[in-house]
Image (cartoon, rainbow, N blue to C red; front, side, top):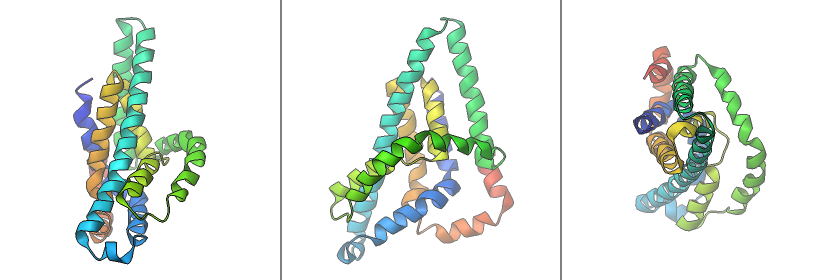
Length: 211
């Protein structure tokens, strides 16, 4: 479903508050954990931030490919006429659910985070083994592990990737979602003050969900 791809970018952008709250602290800690000479040079710091996020988005793409392949396989088992219709109904319902979740009207959707806990318990030690991060290559590797961190928004997007129709489209969907989250995650420290001010506006969260 090519029409879903723009939805991925919108969901990523609309997740700004969730991303700042969950990943802002992570990217801040990662930045502060770098060597002082790296933090003193803006170009070097930006290189590490790009590496972290490139690894994160790459993992999203891998998960999206798996989800798209699974969805395509299930659709193939369904009746040729009713199958695509059921898939579209499911995806439409999930888009609405994600919007409600972003708006704060459907917090129960966060329960999907539990799905990834067993896998994360195995991957988390691998992430720790990459510390201290002393090269962009290690930053890229850590970002790839970070991409598997259980997150309600990531998993909500992943459920939508199931309905994209195949692994390539699933990977593209999650890559676009990841790009949508990039401004909030990469600029977490710079946007911290703005986030606090926007957080005091009750309609800011509702507006993201409606969008």
